Image (tube, rainbow over all chains, first blue to last red; front, side, top):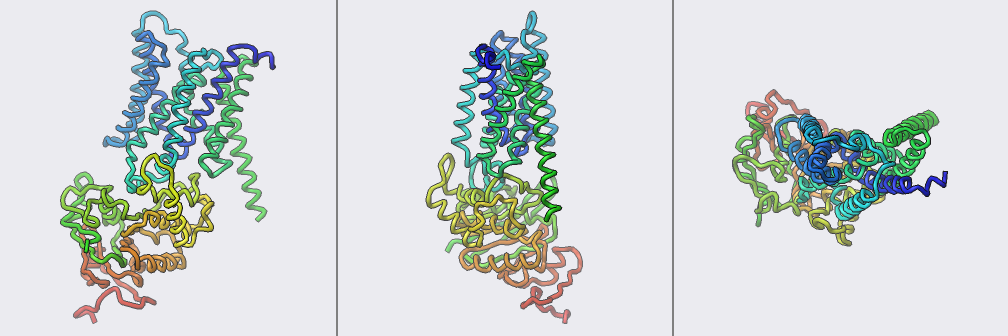
Length: 274
Length: 254
C-alpha cells in the first residue's frame, strides 16, 4: 500500500482530501446547525452554470465556478429572504436555473467538453497540482473568515432575531455565511462533484454532532471524520476501480448509519436500565 | 425625566391585514412591571417587535428612552418566546448569555473582561451560574427560561421585554419566574405580554389589554368592558388565591 504514496496523483489526492475535509468540516457544522442544507444544495447545483461558463469562455472551469457560486449565494440568500414566494420554492427555481444555464453554455461551447463528468461527480484521483493551490487559498479564506466571525456566526445560527435586536447586521452576516458556503462548495467540487457536494457538507457535521455539544469541537471532530473517511474512500476506490466521490459518500453514509443506530441502542439500553 | 416608551398612533399591517391599530402608550416610571394581556393572535408579539425595531409601523411614532428603537438597543433586553426552537443546538449556557453582550462588544471583537463580568452577574441574578457549562438542551424548561432572562440582563437593560415567559412552565416554575421579575422590576421597567390572565394577577403594577387595539388606564385594574372587548367574549375571573382584584368593582355589577 505504501508504495502508492510515491505516485504524484495519490499525493495530490490525499492533499485534496485533507483540504476538502477542513473546509467541509468547519462549514458543514454551520450548514447543519443552522438547517440551511437545502439552500446550500441550491448554491452547489446552481454553480454548474459557472462550470459551463468556464468551458464557454475557454478558461479553467474552476475559475468560472468561483464567481458564479458567489453570485448564486448572494442571489439565493437575498431572494429567499426578501421575495414573497416561499423560501424553498425560490431556492428550487434558482437551483434549476443555474443548472440550465450550465447545460446551455456547455452546449454552445464548440467541440467537446473534457472532464465534464469530473465536475459533476468528482474525481479526486485526477486533481492537478494547480487546483490544490487554489483549494489551499480558499481554505485559508474560509478558516480566516470563521476565525474573525466566530462569535457572530454562532449568535446568528443560534438565534437570528435576538442577534438583530443586539444591533448586528444579521442579513449581511447571513449573506457572508452563504458566500463562505459557496467557497467551500468550490473546494469540494473536485473531490465529489457538484451533485454530491451536499453529502460532504452534511454527513461529517451530523456525525460529529453525536459526540459533542460544543461548536468548535464539532468542527474538529467533523474534520477528522472527513479526512479519515475520504482517505479510506480514495484507497478503496483505487483498489476496486470504482468512482472515488461516490465511494467516499457511501462510506460516510454507512458510518453515519452505524453511529446513529449504535447510539440509539445505547440510549435505549440506558433508559431501560434506569 | 425621559419617558421609557412613547408610542403615538402606531399602526402595523401584514399585507392588507391590520395587526395593530392606533396604539398609543406612554410609560414614564423607570421601574415596575406592565402586564399586557390579550388573546392569541391579538398582536402581542407584533407589539414587542415594534418596540424592538424589528417591525416598522406604517404609521405613527415609536420612541424608547427618547430615541428610535434601533438607537436604544443597548438599553433594551428581550426574552423571546421559544416555540419549536432547536434545543439540541451545540451551545452552552455561558455562550448563550454572552450573546446578550454583543450590542456592547460590537462586530469582530472578542468578548472583553467586562462582558464576561456582566454575563456572570446576569447568571448569578437568575441563580443559574453553576449551570454555565451545560448545553442549553440539558436544562429544564424553567431553567432555560431563566437563562434567556440572563441573556437579556447581560445587556444591562433599562427596559426588559418578555414574550409569554410563562408558556410551558408548571405553576411552581411560573411562581419562581414571577418572583424573579418582582425583584428585577425594582431596577428596570418590565413589559410582559401573555395570554394567561392569571399570570398578571399578583406581581404586575400596571395592566393593559391588547387585541389589535390597546386599552390602558395607567393602573393595575381593568374595567370588565375592556377585558371583554379584548377577548370578544364574556370573561369571568375567579379570584382564587389572588390577593388583589384584577377587575375593579363595577356599578350594577355587585
